[in-house]
Length: 89
Picture 1 (cartoon, rainbow, N blue to C red):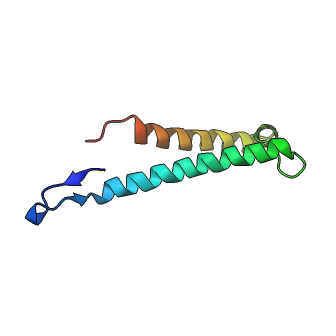
Picture 2 (picture 1 turned 45 degrees about the vertical axis):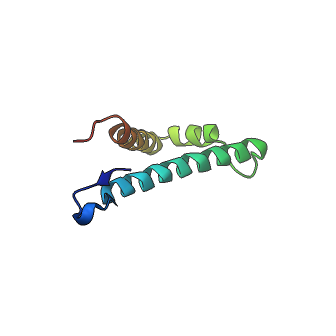
Picture 3 (picture 1 turned 30 degrees about the vertical axis):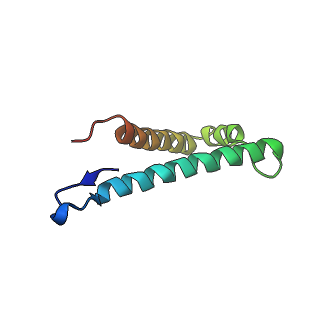
């Protein structure tokens, strides 16, 4: 976490943007972990939850689904790319 020493009295304060970045990163990891758990359950009980391969095939079978997959892939990719690869100014 970044500390701001410009605060009065020499006290270190955590910058709000850093705290938000940590929260968003944790939320991404929770989302990924939930997806992995859901896929494990889907592989063990495919009649209850469809595996990602079946969901992807169903979505890709029609044009609106392909557009949704494409848009979702770009959304996630750009957000992860900009968060973890671009230097902060």
